[in-house]
Length: 118
Length: 108
Image (cartoon, rainbow over all chains, first blue to last red):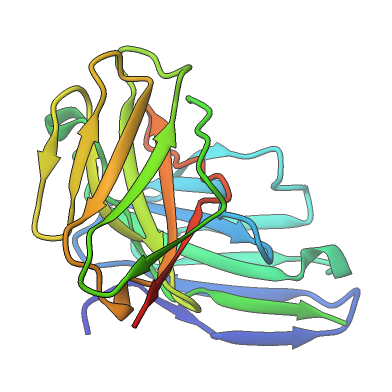
């Protein structure tokens, strides 16, 4: 399977603990995105990378959240001092950056990591 | 990015065409209309996009009104596997702004 993969698929943690999620994008894709989705809502944009550079961060991404893409391949999203409000599905997507040639940038999503904070 | 409005839910009989409407009256001239869908417990999946002209691919057709204030996604022969939440997104950047979408339930 050459799609976007995420690990773990499920994470249960206690409030105050730190958690880290990993995303492996499609290999030739240079853009990588993180979204968060709560029950009954559409995904909300958190941040995105162009290769290893983090180009945009949402206001939703508080200082407890940090994302990295050190070699321009896989990415990690860390949440420090988790709160119950952090419980959500965290989705990763990747794309080939075809914006200038086709006017859009089809994003391929992974299955997500479901975080439950007790 | 343009604000979009979609009905919260729709039903469709299996084998019939599903027509999903979307209002995007604030869309600007350089903003595309994108459709993604999300099947339960999966990540969203790209369906189709368009700017001014109607578009068709192997999954669906997209009809955009001449004034670009609304569009309709058409699944020509809906199957049970098309049951999902369908998101209409208007934007000119790589960042996708999802609304709450339309839950399409295909009935046997």
